[in-house]
Amino acid sequence: MENDLYSYSPITEREPIVWPEGKKIAFYLGLNIEHFHVGVPATSSSPLTAGFSPDPMNHGWRDYGTRAGIWRMIDLLDEVGLRASAITNSEVLTAYPQIVEAAVERDWAWIAHGQTNSILHTGMGEEEEAAFLETMMATWDAHLPARPQGWLGPALTETFATPRLLQERGVKYLLDWTADDRPFALNVPGMISVPYSMDVNDIGLFVGKATTGSQYEEMVMDQFEVLLSEGGNVMALPVHPFVVGQPFRFKYLSRVLKAITSHPDVWVTTSTDIADHFLAGEAAKSEPAAAAA
Image (cartoon, rainbow, N blue to C red; front, side, top):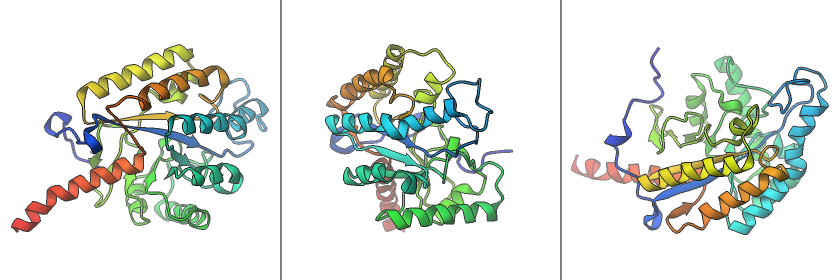
């Protein structure tokens, strides 16, 4: 079965994107802020108790992110002048109001991340998913000035109907399809894909692997240096407060962010601003053709 969501387009046949002020690369921090249900298996630091209900070892580890890890991360983002792209479950808005207040105060960009990371979208029927999205959007509408413009499914899960259902509810970009180093148009009118990364994602590097903090720093900087040298790319750095917010890893995140955000050729931005810039460029390309017609 072919993927009808987007068409094949090699990066060599597309012009590098021109970023604001002639910057060579766009960089955003994808800060995953998640709510997990007690007694439901989820991302775990130890498989020994991952199937238990309750599971104090792993649930407490996940809760560390919202209770402690995110607050040291907020201090770091303030220090380097970086607005987070807040990839957030809608249940976070009611479960952790202090985090939402801090994010709104800092004008972070919001990316819808489902209701909770304890419920995935895979296998939902269309009517079920539509109702699920309506409930989620109602929560956003009740707590924030505007709905999120982007989407990352819990554990990057979608159904084949998800992009269209999201577009009908005002979402204009997806992060789920990690197929490119640049934004690209989807075959759903008005929808695009913005790069995300599983390869420098702290979950993939640290959970279940023996990656050290210094190795994480080296990998992230290697990713950055290659994308920068090519020009016109996006670098996404996905992080989770319960993973890289741990003290022994946090010092390496701090080093990485200070190095990247201080580089003169980097547009330090959000995933939403990247989407807006790309869509504006695509609209500008179509104007001469429309005028000629």
